Image (cartoon, rainbow, N blue to C red; front, side, top):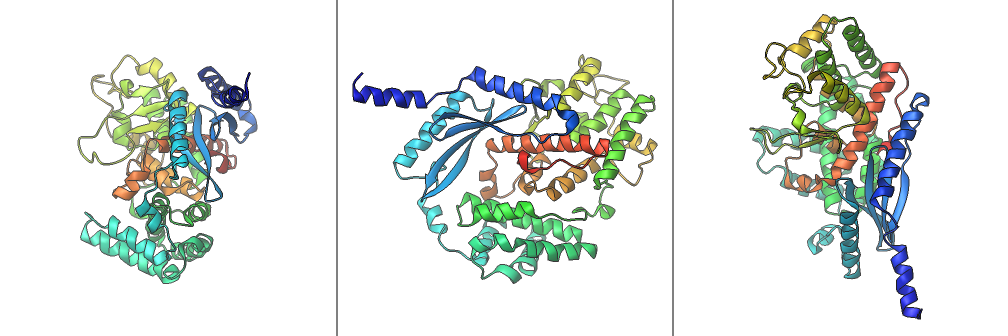
Length: 440
């Protein structure tokens, strides 16, 4: 073999190391291993499998994350290429080849434009925030624009307006401390809104490659608070304390076991806790929209608010097991939760709340409250607000943020939903919550 052919042969061997069967086997093994050791409450670890130069997949129970690693301006960078099996092995290789082509041409694989690069020059936090706000406010109600600008000025620009954006990340705990004090004065709703502003600015900075965006997001995820982010006294009642939520989960199962609520209603409440979708979405869910193979709930477009997010809800193994058991009861009907008098219609929209009232939770927690429970506890444990907002079905309302919400984000939410399912198990047992970092 001549030298040129030998080099080509080595390159071919260096690429395309993986196969679909190997990936599926690794995911299956990760699921089995996680289930076997569940009683010891282990933290799931990602297994890295390399396919070719820069291209690898991180294997976790039930899913694989395609990643492409490259060097840009002397610094290691990574981008997401989607999640397996939503993005096949062939598609991932094609995307990796396209990324290598762009690098060879002197462009970033994630498509940064010259305009974005110019924007990524030295900026102060005030300049970045002002540019974000100009884009965000378009099409918004005047009152919302005014209150958001007020919060931006009072809580953020007053501290960081003249600070280089690349240095803001390490100073974010100052905002957290100040807002936590405000929360003790019953201003937790203000904290919730300001955290949303911080997250939207983070998304804007990341999309436009503002220097320091990665560090900013890293510090933002670390912000934790010891009080609820949702002022449930002024909203639908919700339990946001893990111990209290765990007690409710135990009560639901005990009440169902005693026959005081129907098995179908009991499963509806458990599903509401696991996926924290709107109660109306839960009771009108159809079996044709549940894909057990892909482990997702594909929700049809809404008649109204079609611009909102979460067309696809990832399902953790615990959720799939719950639905599999339910299918034995209602799988012959159109709806997951059919009306007991007429199975062609969905369950009454009052069924879950009436069940909670019979358990003694009237005024303390309602079916809609599972959404506030999840949002609060996930945020307190470091999950990015844009992930929780998309899972809640809120979705981004400005075009810059919308650019960030691509299907690749489904894989990130899948890790978040797995943590949430594991966390609910821990709450029900009365154990400490699992470390969220491996899931992020």
